[in-house]
Image 1 (cartoon, helix red, strand yellow):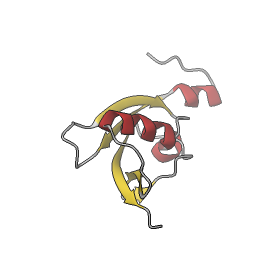
Image 2 (cartoon, helix red, strand yellow):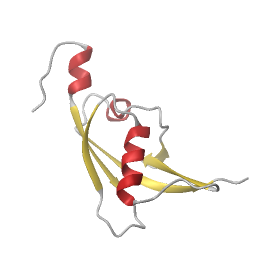
Image 3 (cartoon, one colour):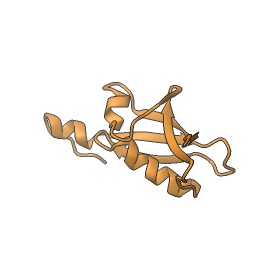
Length: 98
């Protein structure tokens, strides 16, 4: 159970359900509950561990939401807004040209 206080602290302690799919994996989706101030980068690292993948020299893994790549610095709260209780992402392997 989450204890809520007034103001900014209430927003930070509210939990959002996060689900991440990775179509090429045989595992089911990654699921977690995080605070609104959790960054996409933090979720991405946990997801990569879950799916047992790592960035390489010519590719990186990114999280997309609604078909758009999300920056590691973006918070889950920025994506979820005030009304959503859950956010869905897709883990995508992005080829980097060198």
